[in-house]
Amino acid sequence: MYDFYQARVDECDAEIERALAVLTADRASPASPLPQPRHKTKQPNAVNFDTRPPLYQLTGVDLTQIHGIGPYLALRLIGECGTDLSRWPSAKHFTSWLTLSPGCKISGGKVLSAHTRKTTSRVTVHLRLAAVTVGRTNTALGAFYRRLAARIGKAKAVTATARKIAVLFYNAMRFGMAYQDPGADHYESRYRERVVKQLHRRAAEFGFTLQQAAPQGVS
Image: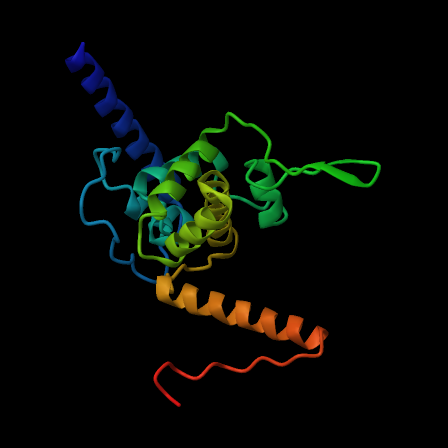
């Protein structure tokens, strides 16, 4: 049974490789060369051939540069969503289709529930798993996940991080935007700037001004 199953897996991998070759045969190669892979170790769920070159020729962007999206997930996203994401007018429509956006149950002008809808979408499941993996990395997305997990819980942090990954995928496919991770330190500094700015605005509303405290040990 194992030999039969392994033979079928190899046949499926070969069919996928041939299909990608046919799809990319008529496409012009991107002007920029294929970036270096972020993952040097083979992932457990990786297929038996390198999917990055044909996917790069097909889409014009290297989706694996987005943290959380490996070659396998990139192949699944393309297989489920296609290469033309213009059917979704904006990233908000795309994430709503994936049920990663807050719900909006309103009655009589009162919001009854803002929970995300339940779904059986395989893409959404994979994006949530990617969000959990990203949460353990020293990246901007990882810092975002950890800050939300500490404030509102891990379940909501997974959904919010999965939504961010979906938005990055949409922008890369729809507009060709290249992703560069600014790092966890950059995210934390930007977060601190936003909090301080909000504190200054709130203090000004009550007629106060904020002053930076002198470092300890300085009189």
